[in-house]
Amino acid sequence: MNIESSSVSEEPFKNANITSHVLDERRRLALAEVDNAKFSWFHVKVCFTAGVGFFTDAYDIFAINIASTMLGYVYGATLTSNASLGVKVATPVGTLIGQLLFGWLADIVGRKKMYGFELMIIIFTTFAQALSANGPSVNIIGVLVVWRVLMGIGIGGDYPLSAVISSEFASTRSRGRLMTAVFAFQGWGQLAASVISCITVAGYKQEILHDVSPNFVAIDKCWRILIGMGCVPGVIALYFRLTIPETPRFTMDIERNIQQASRDIETVLALKEENDIPLGTKTNVPAASWSDFRKHFGQWKYMKVLIGTSWSWFVLDIAFYGLGLNSNTIISSLDLPFGSQKNAGVTGAIYDNLINISIGNLILSVAGLIPGYWASFFLIDSWGRKPIQLYGFVVLTILFLIMGFGFDKLNANDAGKKGFVFLYCLTDFFQNFGPNVTTFVIPGEIFPTRYRSTAHGISAASGKLGAIIAQVAFSKITSLRTILEIFAFFMLTGIFSTLLLPETKGKSLEELNEED
Image (cartoon, helix red, strand yellow):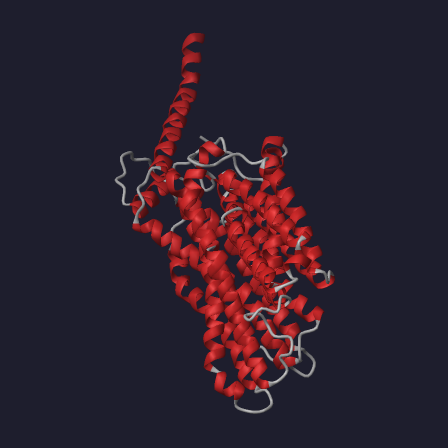
C-alpha cells in the first residue's frame, strides 16, 4: 500500500521533470536557430532600422557644434561660455536620463513596446528646436537647452534598445559586425551634419554677402535648417521601428513563452518549425527583480563586468565628446585655413568663418571618424572585442601624451600644426577602431537577458556622465594642453578597466551569461 501510494505521488514529479526537460531542450533548439541563422534580409532590416537611430542621434548631437557658432552671430558676437556650455551639455544630460530610464523599461515591458517611442521624442524635439525663438521673458538659449535635454532623453533610449535588439536577433558568428554596423551609422550622422552645413551656408552665400553689414536673417535660417534636418531620417525609420517584432529572447526568457518566440523566429528568419509546443507554454528561468538584481551583480564575477563596461565607457566619452563637441575651438586655436577665423567680424569674414568650420568638421569626419568605424566592422569578429578595446586605449594614451606634452612644439610652426591635425585625426580613428565601438558592443552581449538592457543603460549612462564632465572641463580649463594631458590619464585607466572584461567573440549570448 505504501509502495503504491509512493509511486502514485511520484508520478506528477516525473511528469514535471519530463516537461521541464522538453521545454529546456526546445528553448535550446529555438535559440540555436537564431545563433546559427544565415545572414538574411531581416538582419539588413534590423541593421538599418537600428542604425538610422544612431545616424539621427549623432547628427543632432554634433550639429550643435556648428550651429552654436551661427547662434553666436545671430544672438551676439559669440555665445558666452555659460551659454555655449549649456547648449552643448544639455543633450548628454538628457541622454544619461534616457539611457537609465529606457534601459530599465525595455527589460520590464519589452524591447518592441519601447522601440519607436524614443524616436518620436527625438523627432518632435528636433523640430521644436528649429522653431525656437527669443521671447520677452525667455532667452532662446534657455529654450534650446530645454528642448535638447528632452531630445537627449530620446537619444539615450536609443542606445540600450538598439544594442539589445541587434544583439538578440544576430547570429553568433556575425553579431559583432551587425552591432558595429549599427553603431557605425553614428559616423555617417556626423558627416551628414557637416555636409548639410556646407550646403546650407553655400546656398545662402549671396544673402549673407548681400549687404555691407552681416545679414543675420540668412544666418538664422542656416542654423534652423541645419538642426531641423535632423528629424528627417527619424521620420523615415519610425514605421520600421514600430513594426519590428519582439526579440525571441525577451519573449522566451522574460515573458516565458517558447511557443510565441518560436513563431517569431520562424517568421523573421523564414525557418521551418520542427517541434510543436502548446500555446502559452512557459519556460522556467529566473525572473527579474530588484532582489535578484542585487544577488546577481552582488557576485564579483558579474559585478566586475559591470564595473569594466561602465568605467571604460566613462573614460572613453570624456575624450570622445571632449574633442567632438569642441573641434571648432581646437582647430581654430591652430590658425589653419579650414579653422574658424578669429577676425570674423564683417560680412565676408563671417561667411568664410561658417564655411570653413563646416569644411573643417567634414575633413575630420572623413579622415578619422568613418574609417575607424569600418576598421572595427571588418575585424571585430576575427580579432575579438577585448583586443580592439585594449590596444585602442593604449594607442589613445600615447597619442594624447604626444599631443599634450608636445603641444607647444607642435604649434611652433605650420608643419607642427599640420602634424597636430594628423594626430587629432588619428585619435578619431583609434577611438572608433577601439573603445568607442566596443564599449557599445560588449554591454549588449555580456549581460543576462533579463538585465541586458538595464545594464547596457547603466554602462552607457556612465559614458554620458563622462561627456558632461568633459564639457564642464573645457569651459573651465583654458589650457588645451592641460586638457589633452588629462585625456591621456583617463585613457590609461581604460586599459585596466578593459582587463576586467571577458572576450565575447564566437560565443552565444547564453554561453556568455551562463544561461545555457
